[in-house]
Length: 122
Image (cartoon, rainbow, N blue to C red):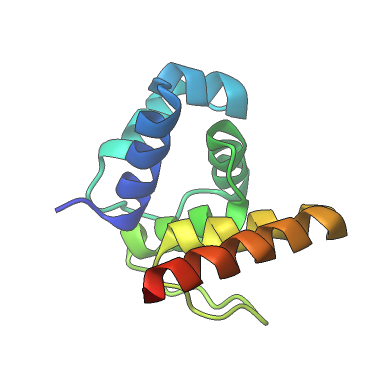
């Protein structure tokens, strides 16, 4: 069964149509590193911070969900101060991405989310 890091990488690769090489090039890390992180069910140790940052950059996602997923894959519990535990990395990516938007764009997103929630109540 794939771990959260594998699922996150596969999801982004499928979503963007990228290869391991594409992610490696975008993130400034080796293709073999991307392949290892994407295919290892259990990591022997927590990857270095530079590797996690490169993977996040290569996938176009915030580093926090990558850190959490890698820690889980390595069997390490990492505590991030002032960060609630979020089980779904996609939710974490969405939350982190919203913080990068301008105040006007955040209002647009809020209206869209409210609209989707109301539509789901029907």
